[in-house]
Length: 117
Length: 115
Figure 1 (cartoon, rainbow over the protein chains, first blue to last red):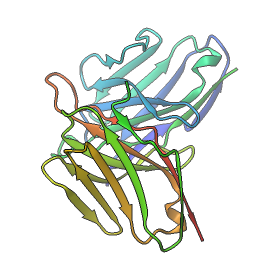
Figure 2 (figure 1 turned 45 degrees about the horizontal axis):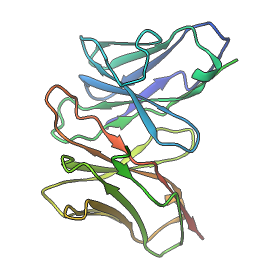
Figure 3 (figure 1 turned 120 degrees about the horizontal axis):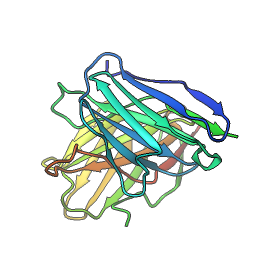
C-alpha cells in the first residue's frame, strides 16, 4: 500500500519550453501533496504544498509563476515548470499524505530527473 | 538556519554489526520524527517514525530513540546488511495552524555496509 507514482521518470527539454510532471497516489487519497527538489548530494528542499481544490502554498524563494501546481483531484497533482532554463535542471520528487491516516508519514514518488538543454 | 541536522555525512559499518545514525534538531516545537531511506535517483522510502510522547519505537531491525531533553534522535539498525547501504534522512514535523504538517529534512547520512 501507499504507492505514489511520478511521470515521467526523466525528461530532457530545450530552454524556453514547459514541462509537466504528474504525481499520483495509486492506492490512497491525498488532500495534500508536496513537491520537493533535490540537488546532487543535498537534502530535499520543499518547494510547495499542493492542496486539493485550492491554491498551492509556495516556500520562500520559489517562483509560483514558474512552478505551476495543480491538485485537481484526491489522487493527482501536477507540477509544470514553465519557460525552463538550464538552472531548473534537477531531481523533482513529490510526496503525498494518506487522508485516512492519523500519522504524518509522507509517501514519496520515485522522482523525475529534469534536464534542460 | 538548519532546524534538523545530521552531522555525519557518511558512515561505514561491517555487515552484521550495529549501524547508528544520529540526528539533532533545534526546534522544540517538533513533535513527530521520521526516518527515510533513499537510493540514488529514487524517492525516499519511509522506514520508521516516533512521536515526541515516546522515547523508543521498534520495527524489526530498526529502532528509533528520541531524547527530547537533548533534542536528539538516533536510528539503530541491527544487524546491518549490505542492502541497507543508502542515504538515510531524518525528518521532523510540528503542528502549525494553517500548515499541512510539512516535513523538515536533515542533510542525510550515507550508510555503507561492508560485506
